[in-house]
Image (cartoon, rainbow, N blue to C red; front, side, top):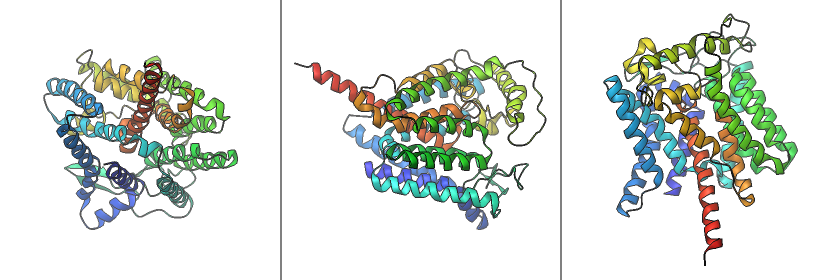
Length: 411
């Protein structure tokens, strides 16, 4: 089963890394919907593992938690919104978290051959972003199609598609995807490198590539986490723990303390504060208004209560949320605070012998929480996958530490 999960995880990552090119190929032959088959790489091994474990009467606790969350918050959404579509869409997002949680070790602490493969994907993806920015506009840029009756981007086009402010996406589907994938790959690779020079070089190249994508939220997060990964070894674990909690607090605070704040949303280039001002002036207030009008306190709107799911049942009120806490609150209400708090603290108080294997998952988690100040991270397939993997690995380390403590005090 371990090999199956590894194979499916790598296949899924490769599709994500080259999704722009893959979708263009499918678009060219009129088979856009075939892209949906990639979900089988996530669902099939989960179902098979569940069946095997159920027959052995030993089901992984992650399945139980996943089922409880889907049942509770999915029921709230169905009763609240009068349709099962939001719950189904929300479950589709969260199943990546479940897969990542179970395949945590393969994704965050990969074997040497797998690490080399991920390094190659990182290198090729860097090259794709550079080509897209300075050399060649890929033919899939800006194309749209329909999948399941919903208009989707083959590769997302932006208002700025050329010149120095072009949002480079490389081989991925959008610049957001590139700015999501490259830092997380780097955070798997860097902790396995002893040379401080090589660490700094990989972080610097990753930061440079993220600059080419123009994604400011990702840039801020990768800069912060990258500096920690280049810090002295004895300080990395503590700094990453602090970063996780600090970023989680920022995620909650930003859309709350800026409510009612008047900000200019005029242009100024892709590196101006205009997009952040738009979140303050429009996106977050509209999100709070939608939640307030459809809130089943303390449960929020319910699973699938905001974001992409709205395209199926409330297209006129679609809101991307553009903040992890806003997204969690709409989907889970006050339980969202509980889930966010647990995730940000799960890596605390590990014994010293567990600090080194905790670095990569803590770095991945910190990056996602940092970027979560400006984006609803769980709506990205690979972000959801790696959030699940980082939390799952840290949970495994805590369980191992607890088992070790118990055995050391046993008679």
